[in-house]
Amino acid sequence: MVFAYIDAGSGSLIIQAAIAGLVAIPIFFRAQVSRGVHALKRVVGRGSESSSRGD
Image (cartoon, rainbow, N blue to C red; front, side, top):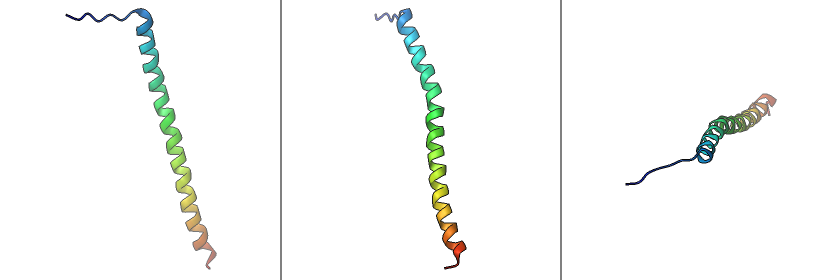
C-alpha cells in the first residue's frame, strides 16, 4: 500500500505553480493574438494602399 503525503511546503509550491499558470496563460495568448492582429493589419494595409493608388 502506498501512502501519499504532501507537506505544507510542497503543497504551497503546487498551489503557487497552479496560480502562476492560470495567470500566465491569458497574458501569453493576449500577446500572441495581438501579434497576429498586427501582422494581419500590415498585410491588409499593404493591399489597400496598392489598390487606392490606381497604378
